[in-house]
Image 1 (cartoon, rainbow, N blue to C red):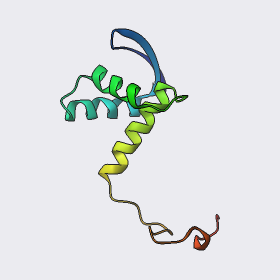
Image 2 (image 1 turned 90 degrees about the vertical axis):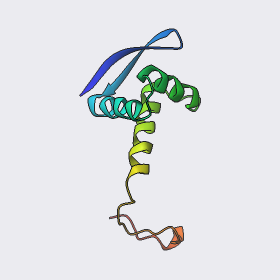
Image 3 (image 1 turned 180 degrees about the vertical axis):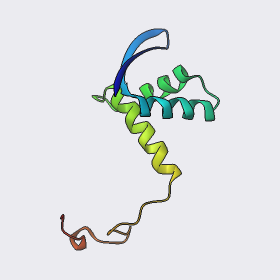
Length: 90
């Protein structure tokens, strides 16, 4: 469920609409890094691409964190598979 949350970053109050699972994981990452949640969000805000809203940037950050912590799932591709040899979509 998407929940609207308010947070203050760099002295500016803003709202973020984000799912509970992403918010919980964001809090865990902040805790693991020994950062205040607002400091982590401010860092994500600074690093986000132009045109990307903050809620999306947070989701992408959490996804990247999760993917970097897990080994890649087995699949039809290997890093050395040329694109033109990739299996067709089902």
